[in-house]
Image (cartoon, rainbow, N blue to C red; front, side, top):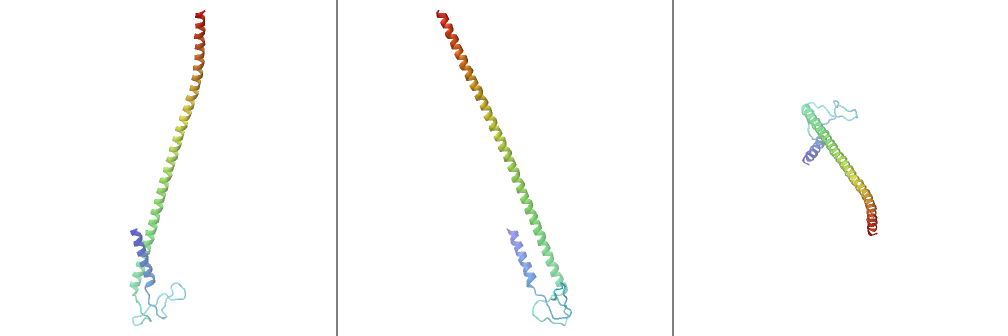
Length: 158
């Protein structure tokens, strides 16, 4: 969160510097219109000229330094935003891939457990069928032995 505070403070300072520093303008024929909007962007004053208002008057070197410093700060902020954006995208991709992998593992585990349960059900069904066959054969053999013993006992008794 500390980085966000620094970023907010830097942006606030940049906005203050961009809009808060008045640049001296004078009604002068040396006025230069850099952007072609009809309003002069700055006025070159001679040493004996005076500005028609109160404010700050900057030397060309100071103005160039101010502009370069602003551009440097702007580029630094832009790079910082791009870096943070790329970092967040990579974090999102990492989390997404991790969750996709977890989902795939859970799906495979569920399918394996389902197959194990189905195999056990099939095994128990098979055992039940053999149990039914064994019971039927046991009854048939038991009845046959009983009839055989009874028949032998009748023969012995005669």
